[in-house]
Length: 586
Image (cartoon, rainbow, N blue to C red; front, top):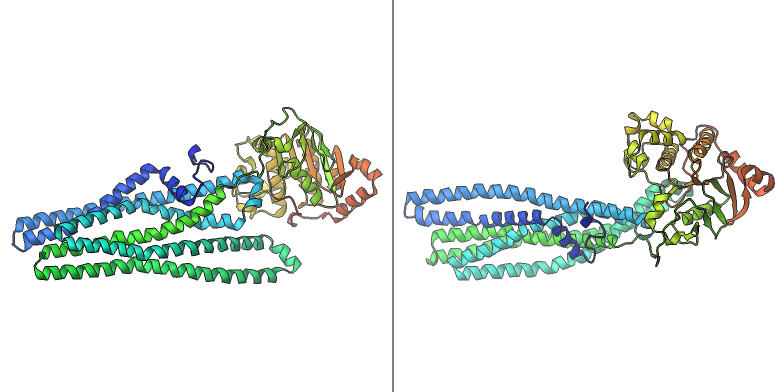
């Protein structure tokens, strides 16, 4: 994607401007398609003309040289038109696919740009609908750019040829096209309204479906599957009703797109036959009139179909432009400040948490949501008064913050690709770096179990990995990035005690001299910490080393004892993931 084709560069003011922008970024391809469209559709008028000349100048007077000459032109025109049609189809396909893929790239790029604001500003169902249907509708709308200009040119040429044969017939053709346009326009307006309502409901229903699928385990445990299924069934019936309305209007547009040109052809042919019977026009001219109008049915039908496609494209473009207009931050600081040039402490005045540079600090809390809110504030994913050194985190540009501070939680997305690509992230990393990160995360067995090691393909979301394997891959990815500040949320919640102990030791070694904050209640991890903040009601209640807190705080001892007794000492690699942050990810 070039600089001129980024979400910010794309035309986002309205749907029509966005479609026009998609035309301008491939103007050469569109211009070539338009020329081919004009050549093909105007070329369709040559065979009727050549056939009429062959009849009037060759067949009727039995002038064989003229008959052969015009027949040769008829044959040559057919061959050229066939070639133009093939070239036009190839060109229009490229225009359509380029528009669809470019829109999909913009949507993907915008999703990345929104970052943590994505889930707060847009529903999953809306983005899924855009990716699956709207990009296709936008591509189909641009099909007009090739044959559309050819259809208009063919209509003008047919009118001129009919004027040379019979002005009354030309007037009838002009009036007929105007009448067809008048009949179709209200239907296209209605299609725009009902399709817009349908797409909105469809996006909401897809969102509900995604929520049900991702939360199926929780719903089953709470006994809410039946309730949610009934609600989904009801909304699905409502969507089906709206789909029938869209289908009804679309069927009328399609029916008129085929039926009106046929009626139009019949009416003009009847008038031309009467003129031929009266001797006003010749037999050859009658054949030509029939041929012109029959051929004219092709561009007229195409224009009607294009009206339908453009209408659906406008509906889709509205959704895309609305999504592209979203901004990552709801409130942009008046004056951005650079982050500290050297390692500095992270502090959260709201809770009293301080993360000193170069230390392994841990947060322990009986209420899981409290430390998650703290790491969100320290990572800049939530508005707060948190500081990095003396600089308010809210005043640091997001790009600068993400370069040096990484939040790794259990909801971080694993995209499809090779394990090497997943661990490397945005840049290619050395084999030694990946091996060290894998070893520190105790993920060697994950690599060894895969058929091609680091080059094995991982499905989207890590579906071909167990819960514990996904957790360790996420931790390895964060360690491979080697950020200045790492904020890790429950990195050992889905593994057994033996693996957790090894991760605790190796994490400390891997992050020596680097600032690290870990949210956990695991005594195996807490024992490795330089500083432990014990939270109560979202604020620091006790601070010290793990052993100091065990000796001084009864509440801390109770918290750690609960985790210690609840930890599975067996093979807990497939246990469900513990609740984590909102998915800011690495």
